[in-house]
Structures are given as C-alpha cells and as structure tokens.
Figure (cartoon, rainbow, N blue to C red):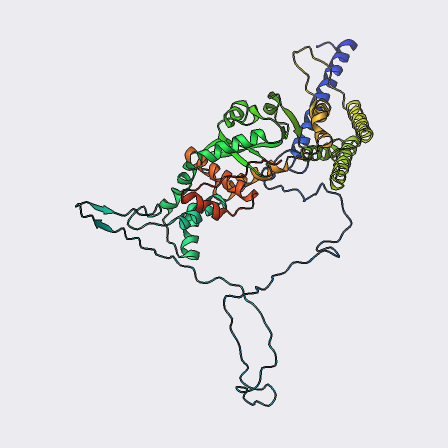
Length: 470
C-alpha cells in the first residue's frame, strides 16, 4: 500500500501547480491578446483582418461640426463653359395656350442648359509615306520615318501610353485592359502587345530611377515602409522610400538590411528617416522619426487588453502635442516654446514610469539576453528608449506626426495585388514597380499620367523638379 505524501512533498506539489497555473494563465492571456489584435488596435495591416473586420473606428477627436459643407465655405458645382463646342437652338412649334404656330413669333428670351459628354472615340490612322528621290549623281535617298512608325502597321505612342496607364496606374489585369481599350476606345489591342508595354517603358526609366535615389537621399525627410508580395509564387518584399513629391519602389528577396542596402537610399540618407520602427532601419546612423499613428493603434489595443489607464492617457498626450504643433505651424511658428516642450516631456516620462510600475519585467532566469517583457513591457520599452524619435515631430516641424506618406504609397501595391494578384515573373514585377514610381512621382507634381507616359513613349522622359519636399 503506497504511503501518503508528507507535508513537505505536498507543499512542493502545490508550488509546482501554482507555477504551472501562472504559466498557463500568462499563455492564455497572450493568445487572447493575439486573437484580439486587428488593424485598428495594432500594427497589423487591414488586409490581415480577413473575415473578422472590426467596426470602423477613427483615432480623430470629434470636431463638433456637422458633416458636409461648412457655413461660409464656397460650394462646388459643375460650371458651364463660356465657349461651348456646339450650340443647338430649340424652337417652340406652337403656342401652348391657343395652339397658334410660332414660326414668325418674336424671340423674347431663352433658357440655357449645357450637356458635357464624350464624342465617339475611334482610332485615327495616319499613313506615313517615305519618299525615295534620285539624285543627279545616281544615288537614291529615302526619307526617314518618325520614331513612332516602327512597322508597316503599328499602334502609336498615344495607344501605348493608354495601355501602360491602365496597367500601372489603374491596376487592371492585361485581359481586362485589352477589353476596355477595344470597347471604350476602339483599339482592339492584343494581350501580348499590352504585356510588352511595362518592360518597354521601364527600360527607358534608368536615368529617372537613379535621379530618384539621389533626390531621396538629399531630402530633409524621407519615409520608409515595406510590404510582402507574391512574385512567381514566392513571397518577396516591396520596399518604398518616398516624400511628398517622390516615390521609389524596390523589389527584394529580403525584408532586412540586405534589401535596404540594395535600394541604396537609407545608407546614404542626409535627412530624417521616418518609419514604423522596423528593426533593420535602426542599424543606420541617421536621425529617426517614429510613426505615431502606429503608437496610437497599439496604445488603443493595450488599453483594451489590460484595462489600464496609462495607454489612453499616453495616446491623448501624443494627440495633444500634435494639435499644439499644428496650431503653432498655422500661426507661422517654427518651434514650440521650450517650457511647453519640457512640460510635455515630463508628462510623457510620468506615464512611462506609471506603465512600467504596472507592468514590471519578469524576474531574470539566468539566461543570456533580455527577458521577454510581454506586449505592454515591449511597447513601454520602445516608447522609453526611443523617446526622442517618438517626439521628433514636436522638436522638428519638418518631421510629420506619422508615416502616412509611405503607407499611402505602399497601399497602391496592395491594391494592385487585390485587383490583379501577384506577378508571374521577377522581371514583370520590377517593370511594374519602376513605371509605378514614375507615375506616382508625376502625380505628386500635378502631372497627368497619360501625359508623362506619352512623353516617355515618344522618347522624352519626364523628370521631376530638383527640389525634394518632405
């Protein structure tokens, strides 16, 4: 018959049970927090929400204004043209009262309505005839054809520009772009011909791409971000470096330093690098600015997960500082008063200390390296260690509050993937990204995509202005 355990053995078993319960409770809390994360309370992208889309929630505070046009603001409407292309006069045939004919009746007034519409669109065939002329010396000389006349029958730069625009700017798949051009523009182009347009255009943009790199390196503020994409059925990484006037995309096998080196911008950056805190960006000795839109989402998620007050207070403080900076800019100031910055900094430090007190680090286990801090501890450590980068927007007014510029530019790549899927080949992906860089940069300079593509296909690559803006 087995002997009963002693009191000491029972105490050991109870202690072991308590440790197991604590470990499992911590694990359950971590898994619940992970399941509760979405694009509105963490750094996860909206595409990861899948079938559990959260209710839309804005981080903006209510302004108290009603939706729509505000009182005193100018309205907008479709304006008539002063010089219409065609005027059609409509005459009443008979009197609406007595039925008498009005052919000879005097005109005493008229009402005017304009209809803006598209004329029928069809291809224009221009036949080029290169004459041959015989000189008195006996030599026959043939005139040169223009650059767009590359074959006995071919499409011109306008059709090529339109096809390229539909693929790279409007994200249409080749089949649908071919259908649209036939139905809407009377240009029955083949899918094979359309597929050659992006590589052809990209091959002409080598000088433009190098110019982008130079301008982004010298910009006072440059934004960085990255996203995954399927290329030839494999996961690849699309990196973006951009400003308010420039956009540069880079395709790479990796997400980290080797890709950043290959892009060739951040390693030689002269200004501030704004990003979401991706660790490889930290490896470069440049001035950094962190995206506070990410922090606001993470703080919202932390408040939901822990029920603690400091995350909400920290989010409110960041928004308050942002409003103070925007107000100062609007009134012509270039910095906040030193005393006000000091007060903001003191409140920031107090909230960090409060959060660290509520979320102390776990006891050391004797293993090398830092102990795992958990989500709250990791966020607090980042906010503490990179305090200057978090608040960079308050001390340098050229640095924005968030990294929305890069996120807007990288979102176009996600739209491409949603509409057209991944890319079948690496060459195709690189061609798309090169042309997309060209079109995005032109758009930021108020240049129409069709115009700059038409220039490109006629051999005149459009180049952005010298000055790069944040």
